[in-house]
Length: 337
Image 1 (cartoon, rainbow, N blue to C red):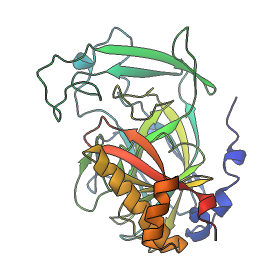
Image 2 (image 1 turned 60 degrees about the vertical axis):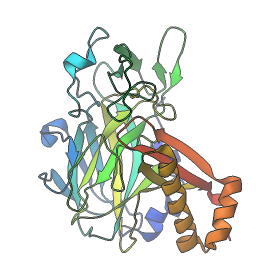
Image 3 (image 1 turned 135 degrees about the vertical axis):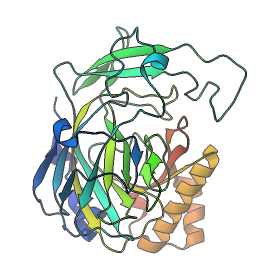
């Protein structure tokens, strides 16, 4: 059953994006970023890649993303160590330039829909040597042997993820990697940080708005790493990685200077932090949420701090990437005056 885009977007008129964006919720032009138009997919996000298109605030872009392995894992007999070369994974579309976006603004990205792409819709899951939460890695060195290499090919449609004969999971797609360009650095697409990047937050799916700090002219938006479903933490290191057709709408909020990405859903606002160790990512996320509540919702800082100890919500994106990502949120009903 196809997702009802209108139903998902019913709350959007009340969003920060609609109320404060340059486009004010208006519908602009629709652009298509196909594989052919993209040409070269990127493994880094920064100010040095040639833009693939320029759009205006309020415009929609339909993006053809590739799976995180860029199609190199085909069958369950494939060995990731032979087919993949880290960090050359997680290919990104973009950069997409947004007219009028300047340093100190925020870029709003609404995800309208995500559909499996191709005649044989499927995703791939892999256990990769020295990658994942329960194995030794280059960052957490041990003398233990790497875990065995495993690849799972999973059929999907717009209702379900057919994990096995025993288990069928719901199709709950989200974008794993979303980012504006850093001001000067070019950062690999596996690493999340204050620019956004590979946050792997399951909440960042259709019907949600992500707010990203703009740190270079035109924002230079990168997007990729579609997941058909993912559990909290992405514990084995990969989700159900698949090629998607993802529709997004973009807008610019002038003068809303963010230190870290933020997320808005129909009933929550969330601050996002990425760091190691995991508790520091959580601290960043909660600090950003408190600052947001103080600046935009009129809360006293210490009142917000104590209140979140009672009603705060933590969402674990990943604890497998070079930096871990956490979102800290609060229900909108507690923000009302």
